[in-house]
Image (tube, rainbow, N blue to C red; front, top):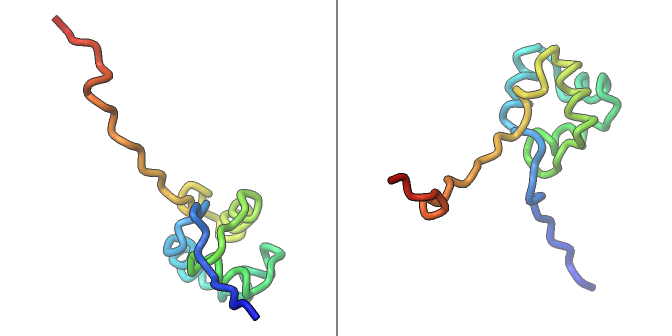
Length: 91
């Protein structure tokens, strides 16, 4: 029998700590928020812990339930710095 190893998703749509912070700030439990969003309490816990990524639709539902802009809950994307060798020489 092979053991299945669980791994975190490579890309999260949400910032797990931000979801937890906003939920606690609004005074909701994981179960209450999950009920408002229409997902299981287990999935809500996995979203908050970073083990599962919220779909864009569910992230919007979470933001609506928490009465906050979705951008507050979104994962910040780091952009690579531009390569200076790509710029044309200014003479």
